[in-house]
Image (cartoon, rainbow, N blue to C red; front, side):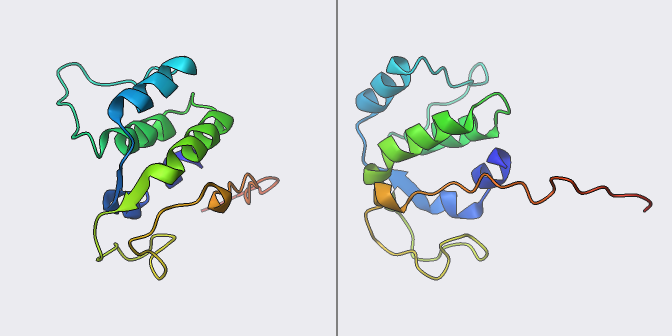
Length: 121
């Protein structure tokens, strides 16, 4: 579930106005270390929090509650950077130059595959 959210193409059209020091302080306060490959280039400041959030979302060890907390904290600072949002993203029809609202963040934790048994091919 987390990886699907993190791999959604509309994230490429999002940047953050959050000061990088504030984001790093929040991560440190929560004891979060974002895994980075050695020698990886530093993302530009406006993308760093978004990239960190996506990296954490792709880690199976990251708790959904932590992602929710970080999303809620970062949401007021997220902005769209393009008008040509990739087709198929959750906000394809509605995305515009808007400030995201914390009240608008929802997580669907239902597992549609629960109890499903697939047999045969």
